Image 1 (cartoon, rainbow, N blue to C red):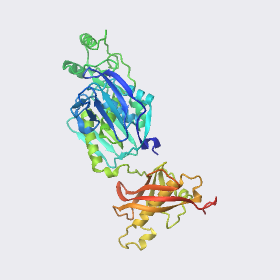
Image 2 (cartoon, rainbow, N blue to C red):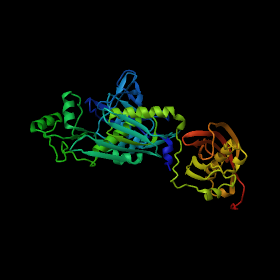
Image 3 (cartoon, helix red, strand yellow):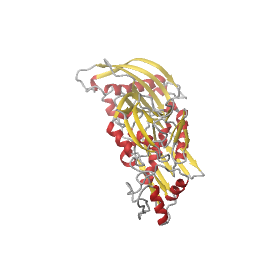
Image 4 (tube, one colour):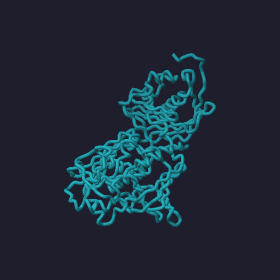
Length: 474
């Protein structure tokens, strides 16, 4: 069951300032994260430019992915955004304004660890706005034949990532990393630093592309013999007396934080780049040999899918193997309904403001004998009744002795029937509170899903009324 805190949008409790060097520009930059209102999202502001233009953190504004991910909009450019985006996604920050006095995010130690540390130290502010998760309900696949990169997003009840890398390197070999849930990001993924191969480093140095590099912010993999002359030259570049190669094939005497730190960093980049989709998602991402360019193309594909299927936002995922929160006997102890009018089989989610129930529709339902014989269709009023009963579970869950109360529905608005419900269908019944319960009045939005499609929806108002004095139902 989803943590209740994750149902709401979050911002920071206060400002956070970082100072450092841009890895590729070598320019010193001050970056301040500032709280922002609900619905603001993540935005970057170049306060050093005329008019202080703002760039939204959105995959639509990505203009460069050669060495990092770069955004450009309104005449402003911000590069190397992936680590701070991963840190914000990993800590659940939805709304923040990132002020910069230069064009590149500071590299810090090459990971998201320092960002995470300061965000956790400052803390998050719970905001009075729902956080909507978009559920990927079908496989979304991406393949880059030239780069031999494969990525797929599969349906999942949460956000998890499996990352595999293979650079045909005798030093790195084949590595993989997993994040079983976003809650693992801060400890298992965030500390992992960026890496490159020595031959890539030498090439970029020859083009004067790495100006902010330091032995403390990148893992350099040495996968070929290195002469003393080359080591001396690298020592001068990194402003060090000596540079050496360890037996593990890692430059600069650096110690790996995890045996598979490079694979974990690639996973970190996937988190950061996919955060540019702009919507929190529930999916299992499998990424084989990912890089910034393919991450961004995959993010564009996922965003296009979400925009096309926006009505599917926050569709409940029903896993028949999942143990119900309420089974039928437990439901009967709460509701007054019995056969043939008990229209909910089990409750699979029950939170402070949301409930999800299941109704399996069979040809043996009593109402099919007289409703469209030969063409059985579940009556719309009974679909609403099923929603009402699930809503009754949500409402009565707030009283200590629900067996002594009933819920009576007072009003139904905005009712729409969009798809037939027929034998063999599994109705996923979701009811959400639209406002706090006051004086026993319960205002809810109900939706019937068949798979990922909306069959029925309606707004309902009910009242909780005490009907018994300590007499349990028979």
